[in-house]
Length: 83
Image 1: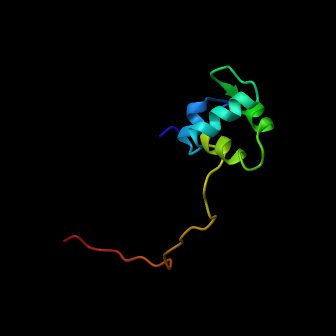
Image 2: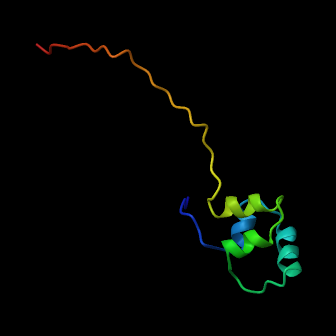
């Protein structure tokens, strides 16, 4: 899995991110886009708020994390002798 942040995207990137193929192609036609790739910046500016999540997913700009981690241990250790 490629986790790099992309600067350009294709229709296939957005479809693989979960968008409906028909919706993607309708969006491209609506905006007169005929190139195989589009800059993320340009795509983001053309998107509605409900469409932006697909751009973010396709370009790895949206991730998941809860900010919590586990910290187990009480600071005591045991030494073992291997006689």
